[in-house]
Length: 467
Image (cartoon, rainbow, N blue to C red):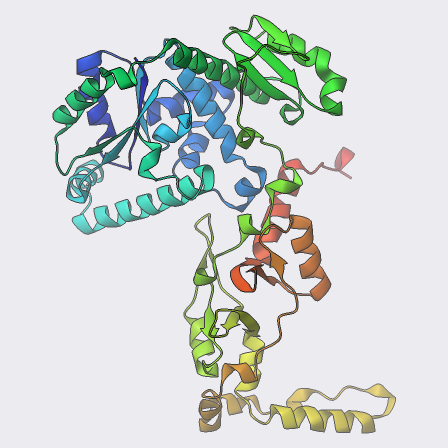
C-alpha cells in the first residue's frame, strides 16, 4: 500500500482526516508539527521549519534557494518515518514533497470556509472577523510559497490522485472512500513502483547527509540511486575529492555499493531543482522583480495630480512582508509599454510653472557671477508657490510633461550582475524588467542591496585580532 500525502490549508481538517484513515488502516500518521520537530536531526530549528512552510521566501532566501534545504530535510525525515512504504502525512506542502514519486497517493483536501473559521475562533479565541483575516492571510502566504517552491501551477488538481470536498462529504465518508480507491487494482503498488520509491528514499538520504552532515561541497556531485546502489558523478571539483566522497557515501546506512563510472540501469536521480548552490543562474530578474501591478503606474494621459496621489497613497509590499515607500511612478502607453518614469522631484518641479523660467535666469546670472560662483535656485523660486491656486492648476497638466525617459532596463532572464551593473551605470535605483516590449516587473535597489548585505553579514569574514 502507498503513502497517503494530504495537501491542505491551515485549519482545513487534515489532522481529522488522518485520524479517520488511521482507524481504518492503522498506519502511522505524521503531521507537519511532527516533521518540524524532527528536523532538528539535520540542524534545522523548529522556528526555521515553521517559517519555511508558512512564509514566502524573502529576497535572500530566494537568491540562495535556502528554503530548498527545508524541503530536502522534510523529504529525508519522511522517507525514514515511512521506511516500509506505508504512512499518512498531512501538511501544507503535502503531496508536493513527493511530486512524481511512485507509491504515493496524493490527496487534495477542500474545506468550507465556515468550518475553518469556526476552528480558528476556538483555537485562537478570535472573533469571526479576526478568523477570516487570519485565514485570508494564511492562504495568501501559502499560495505565494507554493508558487515559489513548486511552480506557477502548484495547486493544479492534476497533481493529485484524489480530491476530498468537505462541502459534499464527511471525514468518515472521505476516509472510507480513500481506502476503497486504494484497494482498487489501479492503485495497488507494483514491484517496480516499490523499487522506485526505495531508490528515491535512498537518494534523498544520501543528498541530505551530504548537505547537512558532511564537509564536502554538495554542489559538485550528482547523486543517482537504485535500491541499495549509488552512483556519484561530477566535474573537475568532484574528481578532486572523489575518494573522500565515495568513502563518506559508503558509510551511509542503506548504501551497499557506490559507483563513479559505469552504472547499472534503473538509477533514479535527485531532481536538478535540489541543487542548492548560489550559482549565477539562481538570481535572475524574474526571481526578484515586483509585478508592475504592485508598483505605482499610470497611463500617459494621467495628470500630475494623479501621480502625486499615486505616490502618496502607495506602499509596496515585499515578499517578506515588509513595506517599501515607492519613489517612482511608472508611465505606460495604451499598449502597456513603459514610456517613462516620474519621481517626487519631477512632480514638485511640475507644480511650479515658473521653474523653467528660473532655470534660464539662473543660467544667465551664473554667466555674470565671477569665479564660477553658484547662484542658489531659491533666489529665483519661492517654494510657497507650491501652495497657491496656480500650483493646483499646474497639477492638472499631463504627467508626460514632467516624466523622465527610461535610462536602463533589463530582461526577465538577466543576471544579478547585469542588474547591478545597469543600476550603477545609469545611476538609478529602479530597474524596469521587460518581456518583449511590455513591462513584466520592476527591480528596486532596496532588494538588490538586501541580497548583497545579507550575504556579507552571513558569510563575510571578520577582521583578525579586532583590526
